[in-house]
Amino acid sequence: MTNFRSTTLLLVAVMALLCEVSLSFVPTSNNAASPTQLSMARGRGSFQKEFQDPPRSSSSSSSSGGMVTPTSAGNWLNTKKSVKELPEEDGKVKLLDTGAFLLINKQTNPGGAVSIMKYKGETYCFDANCPKCKIPMTKAYPLPPNEETNNQAPRVACDFCQSTYSLKTGKKLKSQEPKGIFGGIAKAVLGASQDSDPLKTYQLGEKNGKIMFNLDS
Image (cartoon, rainbow, N blue to C red; front, top):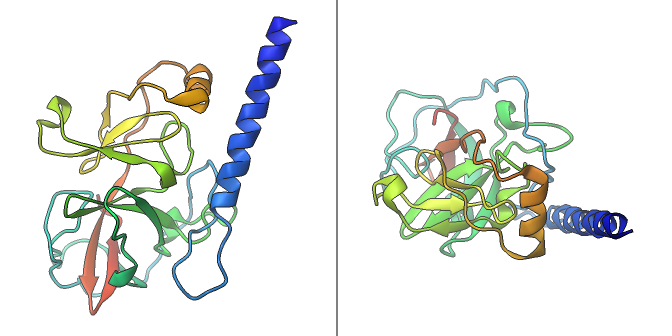
């Protein structure tokens, strides 16, 4: 009876989380950038052949995952989104539809969305979903550099499973301790293993006030 009751509570908690995630991606009706509809799977598709001339230098430069100084090399895509749509609040994730075919999935990621986070003056771009639990990274949170990143690169942690990655390279790092009931559920369901794919990071640039996106991490 105890095992049955525990299983029932686990299922109820998971269903509640899924409902919360679904409500987070209801599109808005105005013309401002709105979060795309996402689910647990990554987008797949053919590559979009709409790459433009390389953008002008951005206001900052960093390695993979941040705003870069673009060159003629690489495949730059004009997202047609204004740089004003980049996140302004430090440490918060904002979704941006890139239109990149390699990221598009009609059911799970119709706009080819990526996550963008501003942290301590730098802007970072990475996958919309956590590589381990596949939950959207909309509530991911930043962490300061540590020995794993040579005390240089900041980190980002998934709010659900606490998997942690380098914000610049996407390298998988030591996970954070689970938080709350959902964190405990995630650990029980996914296991204690640290193994998972790295978090894909992407380059952002600017041209004529528009956000440019590069799939080459």
